[in-house]
Length: 295
Image (cartoon, rainbow, N blue to C red; front, top):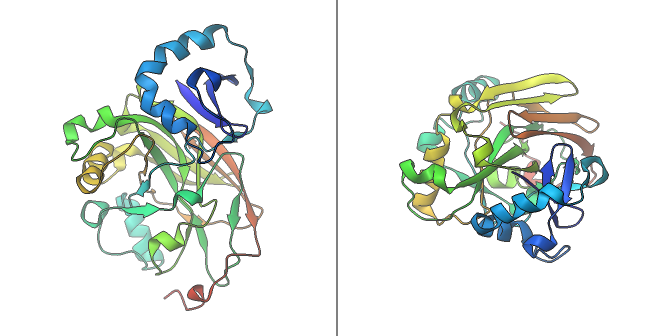
């Protein structure tokens, strides 16, 4: 099943190029604050699934093109991200900038990205006005936790996955704290919807691709991950309780590069979906912390 947030917190089921509004069916409240409608759907999905499947068979539909899709989960408890999780990306960063630590994801662990950096498939990436700094795209898979837990065993980890989406991790290059460099508003586009895990059975062979202005820059598969999906869940839950709707970003493959205002970034993930995101330049976001040289 494909579950979407749209038009100010409505919940929908995507069928082909159409969407069924199931907001009333799942007791969600549009425009509520905080926007937790999809979190409740994920938490209650085992009891909702059959009812939703029956409802969408005969319910009215509208074209996806006539609604504004939003980031599927706007208010997760946390966004967990794994750095340095592809060997090829580690090597390109060592050779290109020297800005990466010598540790891989299996020894370095993970970090948290601000929830407020989340944006949706209809939202542009808004670049801060920072002189002499590059801002890069990173092509990643988003994993949504369905069943929460702590100290989850590797062999049980996939049972805690609710579904997947596309995710672009945007970053200001430099040596400042990673969370600051990755947490500007709009620096985490996620979407276009959640594809439930039963529709993506081969978690270890999901192909990812990202292009900028039609030029393919990143192309890889989850088979190349250093820390794979079950181990990400095991590692994260060893430290903290995972909750329904938590998002895990799998890390980026090689091919990261700069984006500037006017660019169009397209991410495509097999069996998961695609997003075409505009990049715009703002006049805000500057701070003296960025004034020192990168190296």
